[in-house]
Image (cartoon, rainbow, N blue to C red):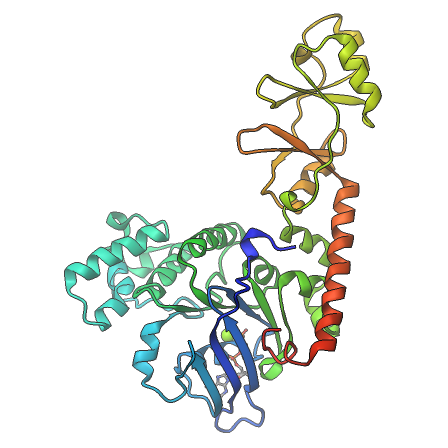
Length: 406
Ligand SMILES: Nc1ncnc2c1ncn2[C@@H]1O[C@H](COP(=O)(O)OP(=O)(O)OP(=O)(O)O)[C@@H](O)[C@H]1O
Ligand SMILES: [Mg+2]
């Protein structure tokens, strides 16, 4: 089951291939990155996640050769770039560094225009591009262009960091904890903005975090790394949550994997349940007939357009003494659209009067309902699919384990 935000491009062209990439820093006993082999598919967000010091930043910096590998190869779009001109390479790869790293003595406009300037664009073209990029990350150019980094909030700096990395429209973006160190609400908003932006620009993105929830939300694929950038598991968020490859991964995910998994499926992905409904204006007999057919103690009344109006039960009818249906019963507050996640649906369901979440389309027209049994079924299906897939890849070969796409 693949949700829209996690749609992996299964045509599977590899944009970056790391082959036995290794970094040993002078004077260090252990390799910071130890023979990492990893395929990064074009147009996907691949998240590297792992504990502090496991080698995430070093891995990223080798991809654009800010750090030179001790051994191994980097293949970019089919071309071995392990020893090509690093300046050329960096123009094709945007980089959002850990701690944002804006240049403090340059204006926001100059910061965002860094790469276009390096490329020798004329000033008119640069300023047009800068404004375009600032707009992309929801920052009004006239308001922010001439400010300096210290005059921005943390979230705004993060956005500028993203805009700067998109400067010359690179094929690849490396993002090292781009939304670290900001409050959870702003972070959530930046993540959503970024996913929306990505759905338009479709870059190949390598994204580092040490937060598993962020990895699940942002990643088409997740590589869970241990010390030395050893891959503990490289897979879709669904697979990782449902069939963790080993104890390290299970520990890393922590408790609540089932709840996290509900964030990955959409209401649209499961079959909705149909309950009897009645139109506004249906007579008492008609409502009673519907009530006899439904498993609930109330029936949903729809308006002329098919939008939910009220829950009405037998007692409401009695007490109502002939008043119209839209003046009886309860307002149906728990409703979600089909693109909501199962997690959203569950949230509504828990507080809803009849332990049911109503599903509507974008115009508010009733589509069906979700109840707890369906959510349970969905979890069970996800689990058995994931276990079956995990078994398949075990019997296939060890490519997936090594970071190669199955
Ligand atoms: N320039 C350096 N010289 C020596 N050792 C280094 C250097 N840079 C990093 N290391 C070591 O390499 C290992 C990997 O560091 P790296 O910065 O890649 O970790 P990380 O996974 O990004 O961690 P964090 O989540 O804390 O950012 C660490 O043990 C670190 O101490
Ligand atoms: Mg790091």
